[in-house]
Structure formats: structure tokens, C-alpha cells
Image 1: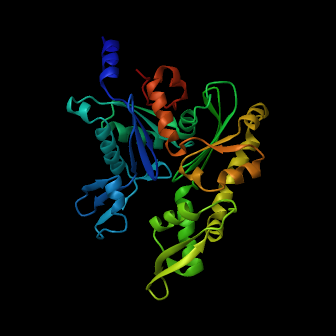
Image 2 (image 1 turned 60 degrees about the vertical axis):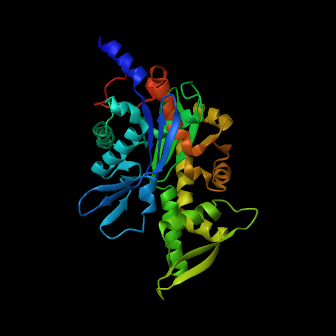
Length: 353
């Protein structure tokens, strides 16, 4: 009877996969693909504790609200930092993805991507938040594994796959073989840290105060990890810290590369360390198949070229790197029986049904 009920729920509930990112979250619905891509931002009224906006609407409020309204990110480096706000954000995503089924009070199964190396307590926080937000059952998958599946790598075969997933809060480096992660490294240096580097550079070099959005626009516009063939320039607008007046300064790709140099070097070192720890047989496979790069941070100009030069291993950015994690998690949800082994084992998760 229970088995029949499980099968019935499987057909009528719209199970979902979520890439719960530090900067952006994406939601995949079984049978429909990716239907939500929104910033991981929640606007909260500090006086009442009321959530005013989530996602795109909340991001528009960043830096533009009265003091008692705070637009915040409830995840720091891919880990839950504010349980209640994370729960509200997950509820918003689950209800938006499962709207018709919620009218019938059908709770979906949910797969959520998490960084490598998170603690049991942090895993439990994600599971509890998702269950409180309306999930019937919660499964976890490590983001590099999901990204590898999203890149259509043969993760279940006896061969080495090397993936570098650079998100907003973390960079995950992993070697995958036979459905498991052999080597993993997590670095809390990624897209957000590069934005911070540009903000700090503007203050130190030009006594100019700029916001996070301005820093990100400049990073996307002229940022690079390796010298460009064509020089690029862009205006950087902010407030002069000496005069207090608005000011515009022209910066070059070389300036921004210098600003981000230290953080980029840390990412390269982490990749090289993972290579040094990889078993020789798997390394021989990787020398042929190459290093695969995923996540929004992989799109930084010249980063794949720099990693290839430093490691002497072919390096390429996978197709549509920003959605790799959620596509991979969605693939697991579509084929849960065949891909069950790639899920994270925890003491408190029930077996799939």
C-alpha cells in the first residue's frame, strides 16, 4: 500500500532540484527543466520581522532602502547563515515551482546542491529549512558532482573527471570517479570575493567608494585573469572619500586584473594542490579529458587559459556553466534510481522512494 502511494505521489507531485547559491538560486522542475533563476536575496523589515521581497525584487532594493529595511543574503559561502530567512526563501521557490500542486497540498521531493566539505550540522540546517518550507523529502548532492553531471561527464565510470566550480561564495575543486568524489577542495574565494577586491582597490588606489553592483559590472565588463589581446577601459563611478563628492575614473583591464590578482592566484593554487593529491591513474585520465570549469566565475576572461598554463592540462569551460549544478541536480531527480549513489549520505536522510 505504501509503495503504491509513493508511486502515485511520484507521478502527481512536481519534484524539484534547487541550486541554492550564495549569489543566485536556480530551480529545476522534473519534466519541465529550469523554471526559476533569481538572486539569493531577501528584503526584511527589521521593525516587524516581515519579509518584504525575495529574489529579483529584493535585489532591486539593495542600497536603496530606509535603515529599517535590510536586503540580505541568507547564505554565506553556500552555507545557511540565517535559518529563518533561508526557510522563507526556500518556501518562495518551492511554492512558485509547485504552485498547482500546493493547491492540492502535495509536497514535492527536493534535491539541493551544497558545497563540498560542509559539516553535518550545516547539512541538517539545509534539510530542516527545506522541510519546514514545504518539502516532503530532501536529498543533498555536492555541487561539483551535480556540475559534472550537468556537464554530461561519465561520473559513474572508472575514469578521472576533474571539475572546478566557481560560484558566488565558494570555489569547489573535485576529482570524481565511479560515482564518488575522490579528492575535494573548497575555497571561500569566488565571484563575491573578486567584487570585494575591486571595491578595496578603488578605495586604496583612487580614494573612491563604490558599491557591490558597480564592482560586479566592472568585473563582467573588463575583468580578466590573463592579459587580453585588446586593451579595455571602463568608467568607474562612486563617491570621493576625501571630498565627499561624486567622481568618475577611467579604469583599464590591467587595473582590475591587478585588483583581483591575489584571489585568482588562490584559486589556481587550490587547483594545483588537488592535482598533486590525485592518484596517478586518475591523473593520466584527466591529462586526456582535461579540467572542466563550471559556475559563473569560470566565465572570467582568461581564467581557463591561466589554469591551463599553470597546470599544463587542457582546460575548458563547459557549455552553459552557470546552470550546470541545477541541471545536474535535475538529472538526478529525473533518474533517482540510477543516480542514487551520487547523493550525499547523512545520518538523518531517509532512503529515496
